[in-house]
Amino acid sequence: MQKIAIFGGTFNPIHNGHLHLAHCFSQKINFDRVIFVPTKTPIHKEDIFLASAEDRLYMCKLAVQGTNYEVSNMEVCRQTPSYTVLTLEDLKRQFPYDNLYFITGEDMFLSLLTWKNPARIFELATICSAPRSGEGMERMSRYAKKLKELGAVTILENIDFLPISSTMVRTAQKNGKDISNMVPTTVMEYIEQHHLYKR
Ligand code: ATP
Image 1 (cartoon, helix red, strand yellow):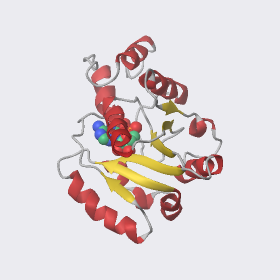
Image 2 (cartoon, helix red, strand yellow; image 1 turned 60 degrees about the vertical axis):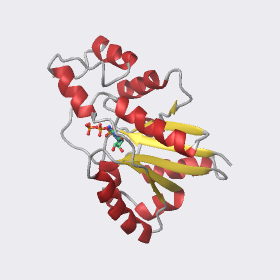
Image 3 (cartoon, helix red, strand yellow; image 1 turned 90 degrees about the horizontal axis):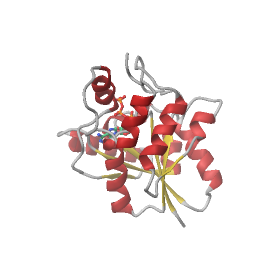
Image 4 (cartoon, protein in one colour; image 1 turned 180 degrees about the vertical axis):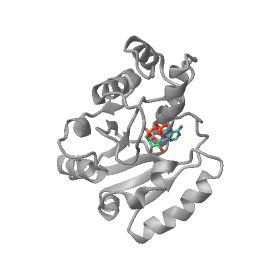
């Protein structure tokens, strides 16, 4: 039985905070596979400058070069919206005998009950999450109790989070600031070459 982790996100763009989160959980749980799954259109976010799905997918591929991580186009290519439950159902069909894990940061974890069919998500995958703020762990522990009532198995890790967000990267890039400490060099070069996040 393999341990397969799915890391869903807008990745607009992927940054070192994402990679750090994936790395911390990989070390703790010893996943056989870690699959980054960029969303087609973010369901939980509005009013952001969104690079194309192709650009976001490509940047993910650049970011995982030289690692064992994989990038999937399954949500980008799907005709229906990017619901996590559908992605997990697809993966369960592909890997019926393996254990699925879903990696998510604090903000997304704390919104899980508003997602489509959370109870089914919890049947399909163990939820792995970590804070992005000083008080995050406390908030998440309280929320995990509510999720447990719906059958969720959660693994919360109090990691030293990196205070980076895609919004910070986009804002810095728009203002001509250095983003080299927030994203891998290959991603920074791609952003520059393709004039992303300039407006
Ligand atoms: P934005 O600033 O555009 O809202 P974001 O930085 O939150 O983007 P997403 O692609 O929306 O990035 O995040 C995908 C997943 O990664 C989410 O579950 C989010 O909580 C998590 N995540 C993002 N940045 C971090 C970070 N620095 N530390 C831990 N988790 C993170």
